[in-house]
Amino acid sequence: MTWRSVVISKPAKLKREHFSLAIEQEHTAFVPLEDIAVIVLAHREITVTHPVLSACGEYGIALYSTGDNHQPNGVLLPFLQHSRTVRMQRLQLAIDKPTAKRAWATVVQAKINNQVFVLRACECDAAQRLASYARRVRSGDPENLEAQAAAVYFPELFGRRFVRAQESWVNAALDYGYAVMRGACARALVAHGMLPSIGLFHDSEQNAFNLADDLIEPYRPVVDLHVARAIRQSGSASNAEKLFDLTPADKAALVSLLNVDVAMPRGVMSVLSSIEHAAESLARIFDGGSESLFELPRLQGLAQHQHER
Image 1 (cartoon, rainbow, N blue to C red):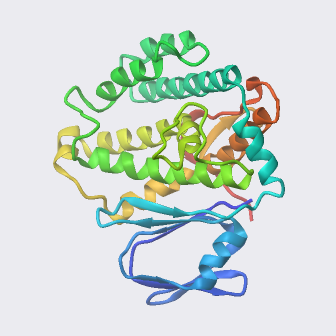
Image 2 (tube, rainbow, N blue to C red):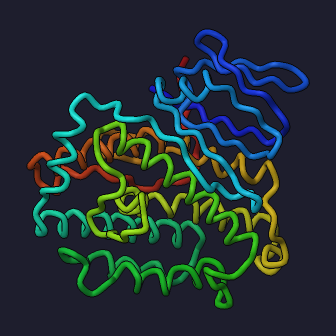
């Protein structure tokens, strides 16, 4: 099981040395390729050799690039690793509307329940209100309770003046964390033979990651909780509003959220492993299974998963 997230925030040259990734800086570090799930290139002076790109495809590693704003702006995903990709994609395209709508309701309910956990963990007052929204979610979410919950959730968590589109450290951190989660979701979907562009609910013709944007929803609150706690630990949300740039430590902490423990029907596991299980269960739904088979995460804090070697 892959589990390492490698964030490179200083000038470096990446090479393949047999079965390891060699990171050449002041000193050369070696990381076994079989352990790596994600590589984030977070500096403009990083050179990547072709054997490294090939290894990413071979080992199923998601390689992120970042733009001038230091936010992830691209992801290299493995190409058609699943042995029955065409069959799975035909099943995905043929899913009936009622099943897709019930599966989406399951996603929305899991997301809101995780938002409830975040509000309770941060001792916010609106947790009970959101819990009532989660109980009311119906097939297809016709009342758009997801949006209703968000309208309550974000101001409660980040302050009444908070606007999701404004330029601030909070939004930069949220965007960075969400982008990493989104790439991990796309990676898992491709590994299980699905098209990340064909969603259950999201269906934009300009979005190559509609299905990833469906799957990510219950995982967003992991990022929210981390950012909310970081603000509270700094002493003031108003101070965070005056900051815009993420530090290398901020970025590393956001990528490490992939290793946070969450509860799944099969037990406690890291977010990254959970995404793999969620994608696998979604594939079973496309193959004719009930939406009740959809395995989605339940937040239980921000404790890092302890990996055994």
